[in-house]
Image 1: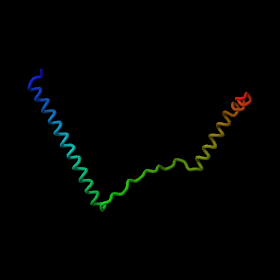
Image 2: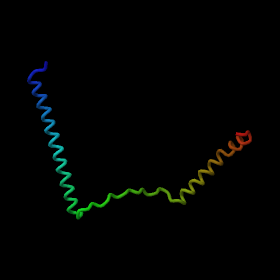
Image 3: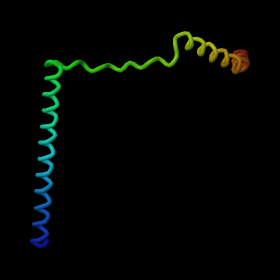
Length: 91
């Protein structure tokens, strides 16, 4: 059986933790409420919609077409003989 002193310490720790958590949540809500009120004051009551992130294309359409063509030519040169040999065998 745990001693009375240990039980009191555990109870104190538990109550202190609960109180601290409650104070933290209360302060967070108060902070965000005041932030929301300030935003309403400065924006005239309406918040602008969040901006949608549209990533910039890395390559333009012409560059992509050139890259695709170069890739296809490289594959044809590399595997062309293999494809021809397999075609002769009926694969």
